[in-house]
Structures are given as C-alpha cells and as structure tokens.
Amino acid sequence: MKNHNLFAALRAAFPGDLDEIAVETDEELAYSWRDLHRATAMIANLLVSLKLPEGSRVAVQVEKSVEAMMLYLATLRAGYVFLPLNTAYQSAEIGYFIGNAEPAVVVCSPKNFGWVSKIAFQAGTKNVFTLGDDRTGSLLDRAAQHSDRHEVAVKGEDDLAAILYTSGTTGRSKGAMLTHGNLLSNAQVLKDYWGWVPGDVLIHALPIFHVHGLFVGIHGALINGSRMIWLGKFDPKKVIAAMPRASVFMGVPTLYVRMLQEPALDREAARNMRLFIAGSAPLLIETFNEWRERTGHTILERYGMSETIMLTSNPYRPEQGERRGGTVGFPLPGVGLRIRDDEGNDLPAEEIGGIQVRGPNVFKGYWRMPEKTAEEFTADGWFKTGDVGKVDGLGYVHIVGRSKDLIISGGYNVYPAEIEGFINELPGVAESALVGVPHPDFGEVGIAVVIAKAGAKLEPEPILATLKSRLANFKIPKRCFVVSELPRNTMGKVQKNLLREQYKGLFEARA
Image (cartoon, rainbow, N blue to C red; front, side, top):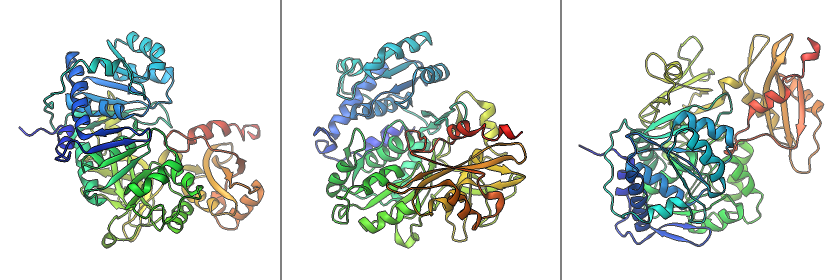
C-alpha cells in the first residue's frame, strides 16, 4: 500500500546530504536536514508513547520557532491531526476550540501554561506540554528521552492531517478538515506552477498558525529541499538584508507596504530574488506598482482559503501570461472555478457572482458540522467559497469581496471592493473599507472608513463629493469617517465585522 502521509513526501524531498543547512534563523542558529529528521522522529515517538486514539488532535498555541515547525511535522509523521491556534487567542476562544476539537494533546507557551492547562484539563485533555520560542519547554524535555528512529505512520489520501479554524471574522470559527491528499496535491502543484528550482532559498517571515505560513511557505520549501531563512517575527530591515542570500519571499500586503518604507529597498537589494508572492488579503494596485518601480520585480498575487489552500495564481512564467495587479490570476491546474448567481446559474465573463470551486485541494468538510458542510457544497459537489467575484475576458479571476460584505441598499447590490477601489485612488488616501449598516429607509447603506497617507489631511465631505461625480447614487456611502487605523486580524485582513458593530447605530435616531 502506498503511504500518502504528507510527511513521507516532504521527507523524500530532503537533499542527499542531510548535513546541509535546512533552516537558518535570525538568531544565528542553523538546523541541518538531519536535525529535522531526528527531532521530528523523537517528538513523533513521544506522541506515540502517549498511546493516543486513532485520529487524535494535537492543538498547538505557541510562538513561532523552528521547534514549533518540527512539532507540526512530527504530528504528521506520527499520523495524528495538527490543530494550529492563533497566538492572539485568549481564554474564551481557547476554551471554545478545545471544547470543540477535544484534542488529546495541547501544547502551549510556557507563560500561558497556568490558564491553558486549566481549560484543557477541565475539557478532558490528559496531555498538556509547553514549548517556548527559545528551545525550552516540557515537550522538548520529554522528546529528548525518545529514540531518533521512527517509522512514518501509514496514511491514506483521505485521512485527516490538520484542522484549521477559520479566522472567525463573522460568527463562530469553523474547523476546516484538511487531508494528507489535500495538502500534498496543493504543494506539488505550486512547486511546478511557481517554478521552484534547486538552490531556491525562502525567506520565511509569516506566522505558522495559518495556511500561508504553515502550508504554502513551509511545504513549498520542504518539498523542494530548499533552505529557509527563518524570521521569528517580520522585520522589514531583516527581510531586505536577507534578500541577497535568498530567492523567494511570501508575504501579506502589509509586509510589502512596510518594506516600501525602507530606503534600503531597491533593485540592488532584490537583485538575486526570483519571486515575490502576496496573498491573505487584497494587494492595493498602488503597492503593486510601487514595488515594481522600486525593485524591478512584479509581485505575484494569488488566492486561497483555509478550506482549500491555494486556488488561483497569477502566472509565474511569461508564456502563461502577465501578472496583473488587481487580479488573482488563473485557476491552478486541477482546480475548477465557476461564477454563479443566487439561483445557481453559471454567469458569463465579466458578470459578478458567487465563486465556487472544486479540486483535490478542497477540504473534507467542517469538523463536527455536517449540516454546515452540506450547506456549503452544491448538489454537484462544488464548494461555495463565500467570495464574490468575476472572471474577465482573458480568464483572470477578480475578487470583489465576501458575500457577507455585500450591501443591499434600496434593492441594489453594492460591492464594497468596487467603491474601495475608487476611494483608494483619491489623493492622500492610504486605504479604505466600506461596510453596510442598518438604515430605516434603504434597509442598509454603505459607510466609508478611510485612512490618510502620512502627512495628508483628508476631510469626509470632499471624498463623498468626488464619488458622486463618478458613481451611481445608490453606490455612494451615506457617511465617511477618516480614522488613524482599521481593525485587522493577524494576517492583515480588515475585520469588517468590528466596523459594522461600531457604526451599526448611526441611523437609528432617524427611524
């Protein structure tokens, strides 16, 4: 029987010389491929020694470290299910995830052991370990007592490898169940599509509790046998300093904006880089253009979700087409993508509707939510992403927004991304967000929340007046607010649910 365990495929891609450096950190530590092989075996043996039931979940809320990556790989290796948790989550959230997932093992930062262990033990979890970002903790102490030889657990394509809880920007987080087959198929497709070659070096500056840093970044480097330059936290100066020794960088748009503020970023700094990839949130066209002017590189923007890993990508190779700002490119090989209206009819090019997808990367369903899973898939097996978009005449996919962000004002559909695009082009505007709030006459109206560029002074009324000269009246926000910052989650996405909550009572007095 073929072993479909993702770890087996990643391990097979290790270079022949296991003493080569696999990971170098910003603290001047170096880990060889042999270190990864031995440490993952020891942690896997520790997990096996706990005699956990088949399919047990290992919930992990720790700071970023190479050892945390080893724990992830060891969990795969031992055949259990990895459950990464955002380091920003507090007790109520952790209580929900542990109660919902019922992990057999919880690993937390040493400083949080008191309150996390209490929640875990009360929920029936028997094993709680600590892991610090400085190579300390009970997990490593216990693992050190185990053998560095371990036979990789045999897994099928459809066996669970990870559960990723959605970011919860609306409602309760749902656990997306990802299989070994989901993760491996996506890693293999991206290796080819993004042109990974021997000798590539990845600058890893993302968190590892999320699809982008954990799956796209780590899998991309490991399945190519590529070295990683590992930053515990993003630091624009450190990333730019590392570029001459690297070839690939992945980041969220905010990271690119911050690097553009550094005088050291220029064509010389980026001369050895092969590819800059952006995702997890929309990349402003201004950032896209400025990056190209400063570095000579065109950022490759792509689109994915917790439930599907990567779905679409701008082309890497020129013969596949150009990288177009404001789009997320084409569906990846093996991924089906269609645009449908609310009645389930396929829409032609340029028509806006709901994005539906299918492919070997699409998840198995939501953990312990069979009704929700059934609701999110069509009768013919396509996953309803909840994103709204269109495919243009050339086949490029454009994301217009989330269906939950759609504003229906006086019976007309208003797509926030369209309005935000116009606002963001205005002089002095750094970024904007449009949200819908209740209104006694129109049911719902748009509210624009705008951030000014450094040194610029913005007033709400001129912004609205300019929009009135360019857009249909039903699309014009009823109010505009200039603020210093927008609420974001850890991946840089604007949390529109918080803005809706903040401004929901604006028009109540007129009722």
